[in-house]
Image (tube, rainbow, N blue to C red; front, side):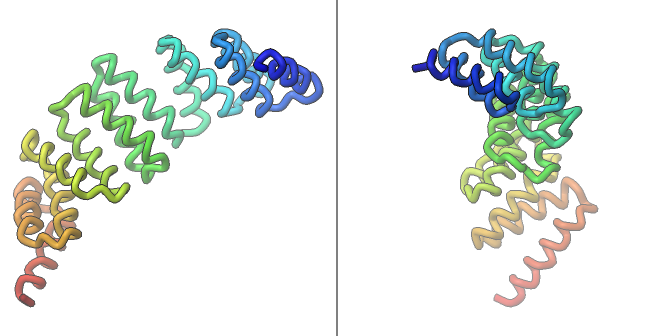
Length: 223
């Protein structure tokens, strides 16, 4: 069946050089356990049709699967040059730098994912999970994981990440502030007040925390 599919796609390419056909043909080669042939197809097609994101992504994924990380990194950087907001490329580059013992470089990519509004929540979640797994004492990674859990509606999991980050870095206001927001949404005003107070202690000029505390004081006075 796979050989027949290969013939069909090769024939289709002779008729019309379509990116979708190359992608499907490459998938066939991967299923036939011929990853190098798949890479060759991607590479040749990318030469014929430069700038096609799908071809570069496909090639990079195969290099990753083959543990040829340096080639994968080159391709992901090309992808970001063409599309600065590509979440998959940023997540993979971030993961690569973590495995290369460059956590601060990795966090640059992970922060950019969050700044973009988390276009691909699952990919971003995977990136920060890797970050926290590789550096279990990295409070920023845990805080960002908490933010992603909030976006997915998992407030209890988010709160656990924020609490862990608070213990690791009590001087950082982000985990306290985000924990306060989750507590507020859960209706736990006392816990919200406690966390907001800690956030303000860590960052006295944080205007959002000040506004949250004002809101809490109004609610307490109304009780």
